[in-house]
Image (cartoon, rainbow, N blue to C red):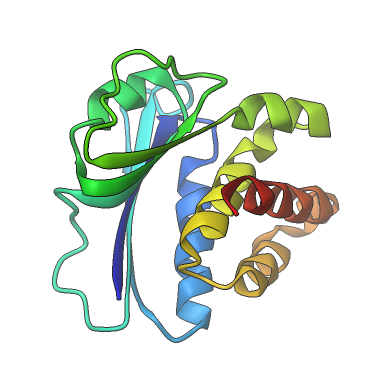
Length: 179
């Protein structure tokens, strides 16, 4: 099993954290993992993406030309990465911030979910990334949710320990969407 994932959105949406939690969760399960972050020049508000590869075998390169899965958090990222998905790949789109127009569904499965709207309903817009991660895990089951919940609990800095519970709830909310 090898899963190649490109995660893209705006700086400040937690794109790198989403990728890092996914990668560390897979490492905790003994899988081979790469995580390749890429920040736009503006960082917060500019574009940001990362590439995560999870495999049962050693990985030759962290770069992904064509992804098995794209997780797209905003319209500019959809425009930039829409052609970087394999035939029959999974495209997960934050329908709160990305328009429905302009994405051909031929040869790919598209899952549209309002991650930002759901995060706002839960009381914190910054958890949209964990809802998206949960949606991916609910659909693909690449990494066990318990591993991700452990990572969320362990990587939070001391001054943000209060956010662990809402991030864990966001992951579970997303898993229901993907399942």
